[in-house]
Length: 237
Image 1: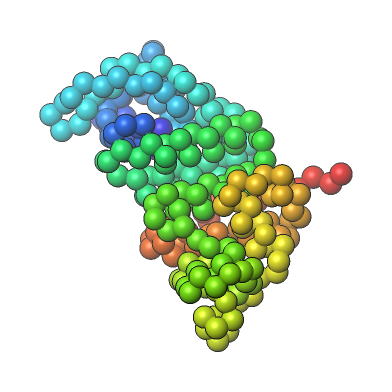
Image 2 (image 1 turned 90 degrees about the vertical axis):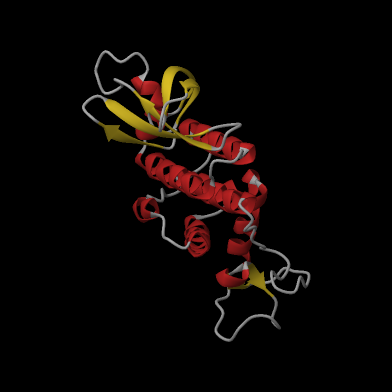
């Protein structure tokens, strides 16, 4: 479930990302009443098996069985909650009505990881954002030059050109990253969690700034939820 909106006195419009039909909007009748049988299964961050029947303007949800009850676990940790909000907003923006199984599986896996606190919430979010943008056709390069393909590693970063660039392609004044930050960005994109989990707070903060800038550039309109993301600090020890 991506988001919900109130409809009338007791209903909600639910926007969901599905395995086979892309993004779907449907009405859940009576779910705001305390006696609703499946209202809690249709909240954001939940994964459910939903049955619909075709309505005049919107489909109507007739049944919902929980497959992944991640909402309460995520809502209990503020860093996870803000990260999850940024994830579902991104999924809402990069998916449409056509089938998007890879986007669906990516989002479900990221929400499951957040609920289990397998990694830092900001790391999980940044990895999700890079992968979701890649699936949408905006794959960044954090090794070879994103403009001419010259073999890396390179440290100059130009978001508008798609990642790191070589010395010949780097415009004057292009910011340079340190090797640790570029390494973390590559690890988040490839899913190298062993390397990502070993990074320090400063490196994670720099990487998050790059990911946020890259996301905002390609989605054109900023993600409102990114402004509220809380970046947890790595525990000592």
